[in-house]
Amino acid sequence: MPHPAVFSAEVFWQFSLNHYARAGVEHACLTLQNTYQGNVNLALLLHWLDTLHIELADQQIHALIASLVVSDKQLQQYRTMRQRLKPQLAPAGYQLLLDFELELEKSQQHELLEQLNLLLPLPAPAAGTVTSNNLARYCQQLGATSLLSHLQGK
Image (cartoon, rainbow, N blue to C red; front, top):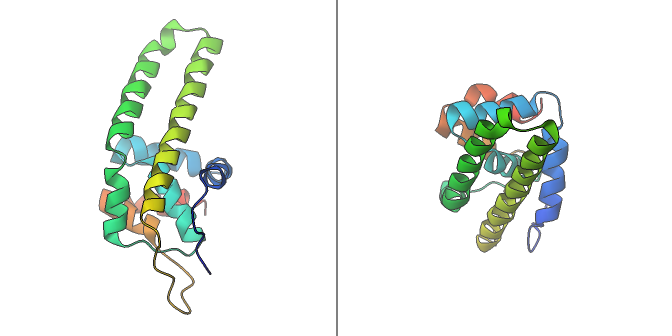
């Protein structure tokens, strides 16, 4: 399967929204984030690449992780603030905070795609290769292999 010349942030965003809505995926993503300090957007990206049969080298995954340092810290600080404010806010006000957090997540996905596009061209899959294991390697790195099938939506 040929790789796109550039990966589309909007296509990835739509994939993420659809995949996150699958049974068990949201819970697995939140567990990855809150228990294993994993990055949900990176996990979704790695799974998306797996579905496209695109295998990243370990160095490429590390480059993606490194690209998240600033935005991940900002998102963590924002989540902490949102959680602290929840008891003081009416449901509509809290929903506004959740909506803004979703925009921060989308922005982080754009950053990931920009970094991924800098890594192009990616190596083509070997002949006969039908699977890639980017997400499995990330889960293994975090010690979260028990979440893999749920993160994959299986």
